[in-house]
Amino acid sequence: MTFASVDAMSIAPFSHAHDVFGDSSLLLVPTPGHTPGSLSMLLRQEGMAPIIFVGDLTYDLEKFAAGRVPGVGKHRALLESTHAVSKLREMYPDLVILAAHDPGAAPLLARTVNAQDGTS
Image 1 (cartoon, rainbow, N blue to C red):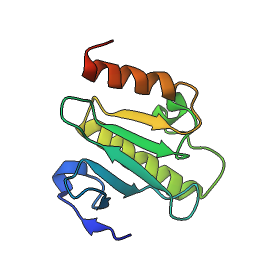
Image 2 (cartoon, rainbow, N blue to C red):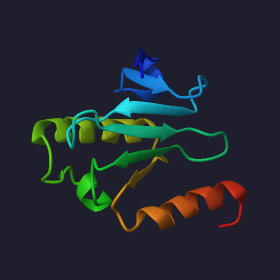
Image 3 (tube, rainbow, N blue to C red):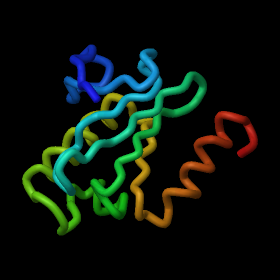
Image 4 (cartoon, one colour):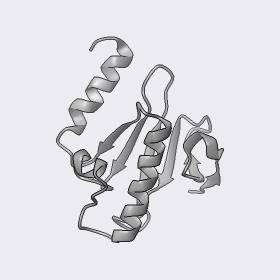
């Protein structure tokens, strides 16, 4: 997998991403810290709020919002990755952040998808 330079204005502060489909709709961005090579996946689809799947970058969105990171991994890298995702949310206030082990992730995803369908 290769990571190419991307338009910094579109996903700043991330400067590199792997564009899965070549149309910027699904980007893998490096979010190191939890484990070597940790990635997050940014989904951007017309008519739907952007979603970033952050895996194990956090386990709880309230702690994430407070800048707290999980205790597993490289603390400094986790903080830097958390900051990068937070900056992305500043660019896209409707950005939905989904964490792998957060019990609230599934209902949040369902609400986001249903909002696109108009089936809230």
